[in-house]
Length: 264
Ligand code: GLP
Picture (cartoon, rainbow, N blue to C red):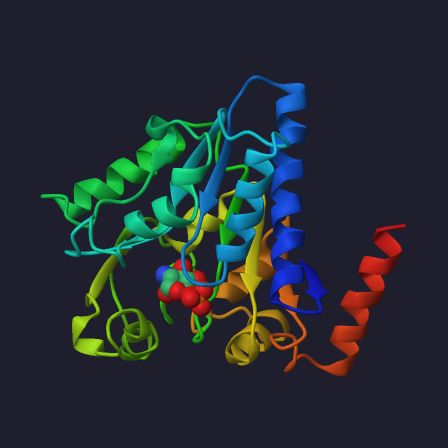
């Protein structure tokens, strides 16, 4: 696992956007096959998406041959609700880039048969050549997508029940009223994310520092589902100084030094 540490959220976001853009262009240079990307929501990726939008508008990047799969969606929240992940993704990315609408996949938390919706989602991913890069964020409790503590590392897309901690944290988007936060969500599983050829996770700010420390330096544990990254052959976690704040000084120095050497 690689760990990239930038001075602040904005610098980390730029690093991620340029990395993703380079990967899309790299694949386009060698094949007509689409680039398949997994995408996340939350406040964390907004600046990364803004930079990707800027590149598309400047003619430096295109999503015409990109297929995307989002990580998760609340159950029972109308698609048009401003806090649905469908609304979020359109507002912060899809409405501003050239990705064809038919290439966009977001779980439908209002599907009549939620189990079928999840199975169909896995089948749609399997029908591609696999996800080239999954972009993720991390919850304050170390969750990846909505894979709350104790989610199995072999989990696939399914209905999940949110923990009280997550309801409280996400209530900031629902008038600070945890009773307004949907209690369940559909989420890709830990194994769905880990099956991607590459995984890039963004974690910024002091509130993520403890989860980041546990995921990077702690044992692999279903208690911190982000720790599954330790076993991924091509995993990168992008931090800022604040989210790196709980790492051991030696780990911090190691990751910084490694990046210096590898960028030469
Ligand atoms: C939600 C999402 C996660 C996301 C997390 C962090 O729980 N399901 O995928 O990583 O929020 O959100 P934020 O980026 O706002 O801190």
